[in-house]
View 1: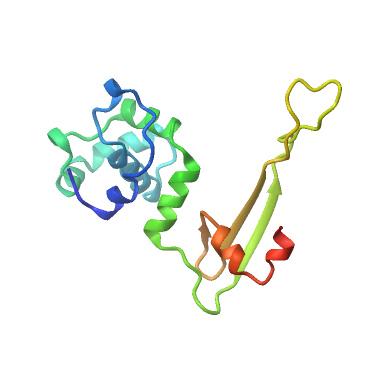
View 2: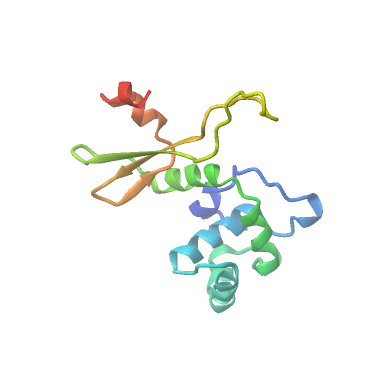
Length: 162
């Protein structure tokens, strides 16, 4: 198989497929998915069509095992079971998204509605805090950082975030 950097970027992601369902390397499937999305595909069937349309070029570039590309029936379960938070981190690491000196960093925070649970007599589950999402965005380049923890710790506004 290929030793392309984009395949290597996703090689550490956990693979939830069972042993019999691992004909194609998951990192290859995710790399192809990423390229297809970058090419404008917006669904499983369009990704499958894109793979068929560029089959010769992709086989030459990626050199997959048995000279076969994953099909719709392989790509779909991989994407449905992927850890998207880990995928985002791998993608950000691959593209090396770091703010440069003088760039504007925007932050946006949201609380996922209904994700919290207060302990009340009618509760059937334990009390837990709301899910909070914080996004860090490099404005000049239109890039979103996957993991903002290290950036927030270096930031003079970390007291506000806590």
